[in-house]
Length: 127
Image (cartoon, rainbow, N blue to C red; front, top):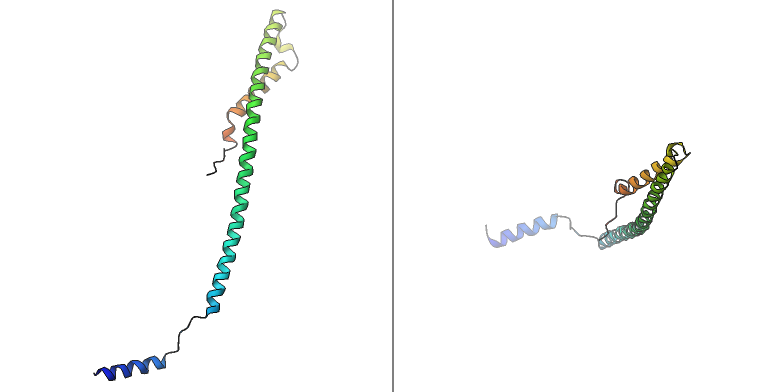
């Protein structure tokens, strides 16, 4: 087959094909939709970052408060022990004093909860 005949057949074939074109509006619409989706994503991301920062701040306040409560609890535990010894010196059974051992149990409970706080709350790590 000659070159001219081959070119003629190719041209005839191409003439029968519908022209393929991409509408510029389609590309622009796609870009607008992607930009809108990106804006939504960034907005949600900012909300999540703010929530994490708020949680971090609250956790830090909680941790400081727990340290103070633990310190006070240890002080009250010492006070309870001193009081228990004084009651025994006076010949009074500490169990007979209303609320004495309940207070001791509460001190132990408070200290255990604070020592195991990681089971309840996780310190946030923000990078």
